[in-house]
Length: 234
Image 1: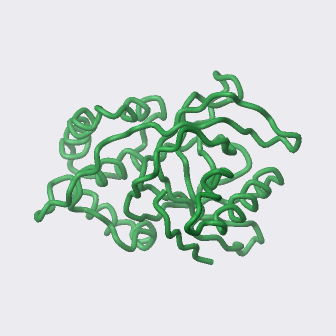
Image 2 (image 1 turned 60 degrees about the vertical axis):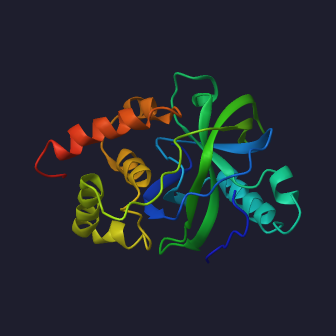
């Protein structure tokens, strides 16, 4: 079931793939209390992940997220009640097994797989800083979240650059990935770089270097070397 959003905005799951949509520009709310889903994933604004949900606490999280999202209208009710949830890097080195940042996501599609498990597609809205962690009675981790700036959104170029061509070639090689990105933005360099960082087999700690607002030039330089400096992407 597709969910349309009119406003702009690992335990317990298995990663199943990626889909895409244009990065939305969220309202910079002072803070929101949101559920936090610890997963071994790296997701940047505009990215989409497909997750299989099987733990009861995360089924409750999904149900609550869908209810709050259905309240979106001319009012700010959904925003004030914590629409969406946060994906945060699973790491036992931290208290509550997550760092002090994550990615706010919204559910955009859901269905049940052949095995009967719930499958959801979530789109990343923006990065958030996290504090005031608390574990709910059902075991669901909650935290106070604050909007965190990332890279500026770049205008699409009239010509596809080398990195855009490389990502397009990767999509052509992996049709199952390409079909999940119905409107890829290969001509937008920040979108291309973000998708590469999500896909590439790098450690999550390495990828985390590129969450800072001013890290885009470093990310592009890294990808120019990593992607364009080798003959093929496996």
